[in-house]
Length: 308
Image (cartoon, rainbow, N blue to C red):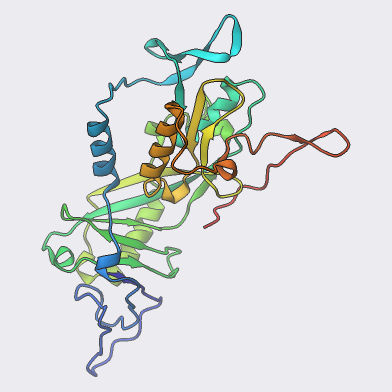
């Protein structure tokens, strides 16, 4: 079930309050604006970490944990990658899939003349424990209007007894210089939650869920969503190299699109017709300058935004 709350809450009254049929018991009793958006038969929620772990488990792939630093090319062909440079040395390869989220922009440094004009949306999220189990007894994901704390909360109860909350405002646009080697965000481990936005989220969720008043989050996290200028994902093979495939640019839908994206890339690697046959709109090369009618290169890059 999905509910929607408007801000500010209605003033409390001594009169009996009529709740919407979709109104979960754990939501502030003065809120009578909750509306059912979808029945439970037509909706589902996944835990991103669990999903990724299961994908990897069933892939039976060998994991090497290291930082990629570039490519090694064939001495006879500067468009054929023969190895990936890492902190642990060069890993030989026949084909390369770059699925590094916003850090995929490093391809601009590794491939001559390649362009990937993405920006990162740097956001904070929090996780609370549902200590008395009230929320998980009647789990409802909430999508909220913007409130006086500049939050537009999205509240997701999870089956492990936690409640994940995002949409807490203050997102920051991050450009390539900060993501390159030597930049303040050249490693995902350097990302930190914004403490001011955590405090704002605590105020907002306390107004929504009285049981969370004066409760500290179990964890605070930060993420970086990769956004292309046209708000479309970047999936497919680049013509800048003979054996490089790219999968990134999913914005907040990366997990939702993960399975179909993996299916497409696997088909391309195996020289099969992709399950999505027309990938032109998602081409990694769509941002490359194209010749104008007068023969000059014309850029197709637009202003990057957080389009939905």
